[in-house]
Length: 332
Image 1 (cartoon, rainbow, N blue to C red):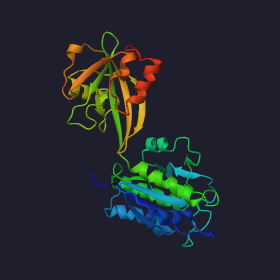
Image 2 (image 1 turned 60 degrees about the vertical axis):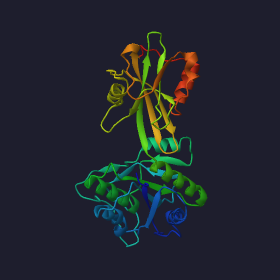
Image 3 (image 1 turned 45 degrees about the vertical axis):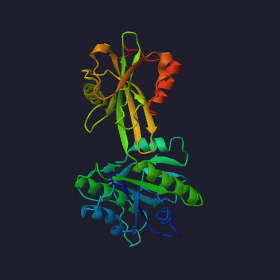
Image 4 (image 1 turned 120 degrees about the horizontal axis):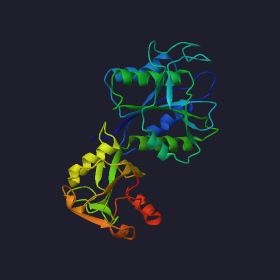
């Protein structure tokens, strides 16, 4: 897998403003070493040509893993992550070409709005409790929104929605939030949005003595000799239930349809984000288990939970159960 590629765009000053903070941030971002992330930048003109540019690049076959459009909002007090792009002109002032369209569709016959296609779970975890960042549902109806809508529309038209993720970020004036603060937040956004995100499932399996099953990863796998709930990655198009049913068949030769999600845990590994969902699988007879991938299993009572070395994503769940008790196998 190659390095993730990220395109960052900004705008020069417009209207009566003396500066555009997005242009300043863009210049700073150029000088940051993102190590394994390939960063490219583009200063867009504040007019129709600027709003078309990224969409045209996509249409010509250019690909990026992520596109982050940066724009300036003089009324903002914080950094606004825009959820939507609207198919609507409502300009209250002319752009830098003198164009001022007060109403009408940006692209006739298209959707009324597009939703950002970035992974909101990852962003929410990164900025949880952060008062300087929030989601917004109103990107305005100026060139910023026009650029955002045209980019998402082109991705939709070219059917690369699962390949190119796009978000628009409005930045406040620098006398409200200084450039170093804004740069730090945008850098965090770039890094978190570029890291792979996986949804994985684990099976909460009980024996007749209400002990739970832990499985040790074999030497040939990453995190070898660490212990985990049996399970694995949720594949595209799978529900957590069907993913775990498939994984338990592949790993333990069990035919189980799990009942419900008992616990969830988001974890930030160095190379990826993982959302772990643990599902109740009820009581299973030990002689039905055949080890097809793990090299050892161990059945654990509550007071024995720390006798094995759990994977980091599993550990917070185990710590909670050690204090509060293991859920019931009859919890459906």
